[in-house]
Structure formats: C-alpha cells, structure tokens
Image (cartoon, rainbow, N blue to C red; front, side):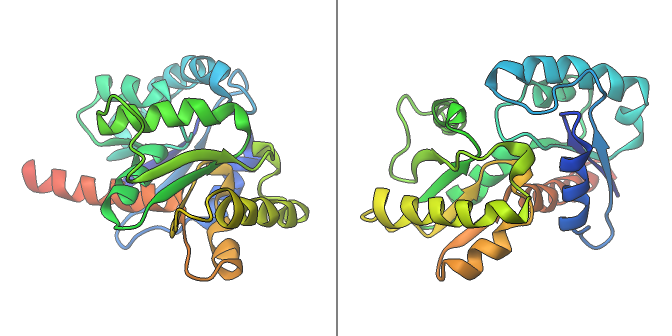
Length: 230
C-alpha cells in the first residue's frame, strides 16, 4: 500500500518535519509531497483556495491519482483539496482535521482543538459544527478552539516549546479548568512531534498528532476498500 502525505503549502521545512516524526504503519509506504512554489508558504483561511489551485494540477500532472492508494491532506481545516481529490478518485481521501475529529468523537472525554494562530479559531469551530452535522457548536464533545499564537513555520522550533507549553497550561488549567478536558487535538500539521513533549508535560492528557492519526485512519480505510474491491 502506498499513501501520499500531502503538505499543501510550499514549505519544505514543514514536510521535512512530517517525514521525521510520522512512521509508516506495517505494510504501508508513505510518500511525502510538498506543494509547488506557487502554493502559499503558510496556509491561513484566506489562502486555502490558492493552495488548492496550485497543488491539484501539480498532483494530476505527476500522475498521483493513479500511483497512490490513498491521500492525506495535511492542512488542519476544511481544505478544498480534500473535496477536489474526492471528485477525481474513488480511493480514500482524508484531511487531518477530519481524522482528529473522528478520534475525538470516539472517546468519552471532551476534546479541544489547539491551533497555531487565532485567525483559525472561528473557522475551525464552524468546521467542527459542519462536520458533526449540527446547527450549533457540539459543546458536549468539544470545547471551542484555542490558539498558541505561534506561526506554522515556527511550531517545530525547540526554542518555541516553552511558549507553547505555557499557552497549553493556560488553556487546560485556567480557561477550561472546569471542563475536565483529557484530549487535545493538535490542530496543525506543523505540530507534528509535539504530542510526545506535551504528553510528558501534562500527565493524564492525550495529545493527538493530526498527521499520525490521519495516516493510521487512512491506511485502515484503504485496507477496508481492498476488501470491497478485491
């Protein structure tokens, strides 16, 4: 099985961090892709469409639709590339946001998304509401999104970790002290690898790496599809 892990921005730094921190499930080959130079270096709500418009034709021209068994779009949002790829193939296509939300719905505790910058907060809360098919935010299962206020390109820098740790502490132990949150959904592909550091700092809290859970779920979907289409 060969899966394409898509970084839909043009930052090689983000892709390099993904390739270092995400392991292949047994029997799975992961191939990491970085968007072309015409793609934004950092994706914010206003540049998602530009990202899709740069990446989709590049993937098609490289024959990716035919080569790979499944596709993981590594932007934590309702990225339009997910829907565009689904129109071109019946193979599984998954976004990392959707993967974490499925995990959050599967556990008994309430979850919160922690994203990079506050520009994403309202956008992601709307996306969560749409994903569960509700007319209002599903507050029984999720707390509203909070931001670290650290840019995507800096999230993997060791010197930023203390700031990240302090912000997470404020979210869990002050802003949401009464919510008993035990699951944190790391809401950015640039946070790959932070789950282990944060788990060590906050005992009893599960930090879900969006790309790692995305790879595992995508591989499972591909295996199930092979049973339907032997």
